[in-house]
Image (cartoon, rainbow over all chains, first blue to last red; front, side, top):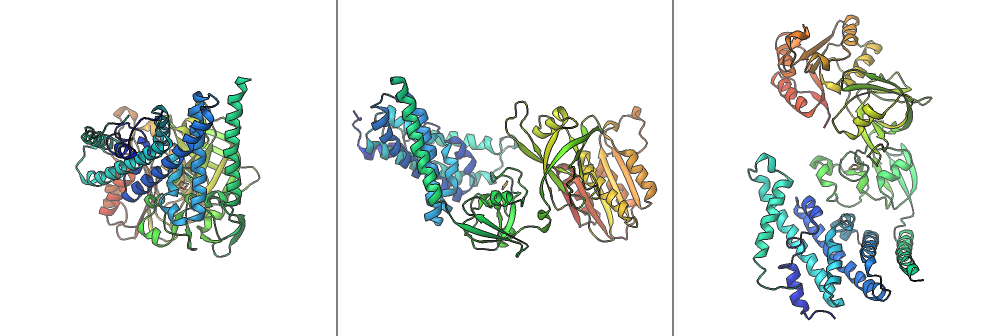
Amino acid sequence: MAPDINPLVLLLASILTSNILLANFLGLCSFISISKDMDSANGLGMSVTAVLTITTAINWVVYRYILIPFDLLYLRFIVFIIIIAATVQVLEMVIDRFSPALYMALGIFLPLITVNCAILGVALFMEIRGYSFLQSIVFAFGSGLGWWLAIVSLAAIQKKVLKAPVPEGLKGAGITLITIGFMAMAFIGFSGMLIVQ
Amino acid sequence: MEFLIAPIIVALLASALALTISILDKHVNNYGDVEININKGKKVLDVKGGDKLLTTLSSEGVFLPSGCGGRGSCGACKCKISTDIGPVLPTEKPYLSIEEINNNTRLACQIKVKKNLDVYIPEELFNAREFSGIVEEINDLTYDIKEVIVSIGDESIDFVSGRYIQLVVPPYGKIKESTQRAYSISSKPSERNKVAMLIRLVPDGIATTWVHKYMKVGDKLRLIGPFGEFEKSDCESVMICIAGGSGMAPFKSIFHDMLEKGEIDREVWYFFGARTTKDLFLLKEFQEMEKKWPNFHFIPALSDCSPDENWDGEQGLITDVLDKYLKSKITPSKHKEGFLCGSPGMIGACINVLNDNGIKDIFYDNFA
Ligand code: FES
């Protein structure tokens, strides 16, 4: 049985209170490495949102109609990973062929996303929490938007940090991690609003 | 029977996905036959579209330098593309200057071959190719620098002194993947079927550990090159050359080449900086050269030698020695050029000294 949560609440919760990145710390590596420039942060955020939504939809169907009936739940990690990797490849090829402009904005980031743990994380959350198809899609889409919001905010903050007198030893990844810690604390501020598990 | 279900389902799923990908690859990723025109018809390649330009070129025997193996993180695979292939990708931007972006320079590993392309690559890269060699000699020059001489058999390599070559390091010990590292060529261009390199052991360095601890005479290895732009100029100006450690390599090649070609009217000052006598090597070779070439001056300098080392040459930081010579010994009136090879720190410090002494034409090969 799917939990009784209004999809709209789920959407808001996944963007703000249960932000996949700042509450669960998933998808950190590409988050840290691509957040130096706003254009790339935007492109990557958009790509993560698209891939999350599409792969979660496919994963839900495979989970519901193949893994459950055949009692193969223990295979879900490998199955989800195969599906994510294949979907990303297909998406890359199709976008590159049919929409060069979109490829410019998003396609080049796709290979990076295959190894983004937020994607697998969302697929596993949807399964653990028993979300319905609609809930899963809304949750995935919201998590993507949340990730996007976080990376764009970090890129904006980094712009300022670049000009700030950061102590030598903290430059680069050090100060970025500290910044992410502060962002996560700031996002805790939303936590009274909605709680969804 | 149940134990068969899991593998069957995973196999079916994986094959369905693989099938989708290969069908799509065949149809969607099929850009047909494409022509790559290099340097206005100097070489025209008919290839299948759909792959990255770097891999397409190398499969046709045209090698662009590639330090990162096509991952878009070294910026070495630059070439100019005059066909319109859309704006510069965000993955290329960090490696291109504004000037390069304006003159259509792109990273070959980030660009897919989808239509006919007009590509411009530096002329000498046509000489770059893959050589298979055999380690002929490994000589200990100091406690941490080895000279490695690789014979490339009947093949012959064509290069200008000062260039570098990429050594393909095979997987060894705990290192599971093959990598490539660039080393300046220390042999003369006239020695066409061998390549020598001076390789300093970098603690925990993947390539240098392999060279110092694993490589044996008789080993087979692969080299790709030659690459680079570092070379002496073709004019009469006084050459102020500065090297540290294995930065000796390109100069060894350049000086022997000049000597062989009889370019001994040109005045050359070669400063070699080291810490102690233990870090010095090839002293005899360059002292001999001074005898044959009166305009050649070799100034080794030690920054950290103790009195019991019996060193009667120059002492002090290489920057101070350089400054002293520029101010007192080297003819002030003649036009001078600086050539540097070594660590980024040394190069930066020496450029400042050269600039302070009015030398603005400076060329360097940075071991970054
Ligand atoms: S090969 Fe390293 S950036 Fe292209």
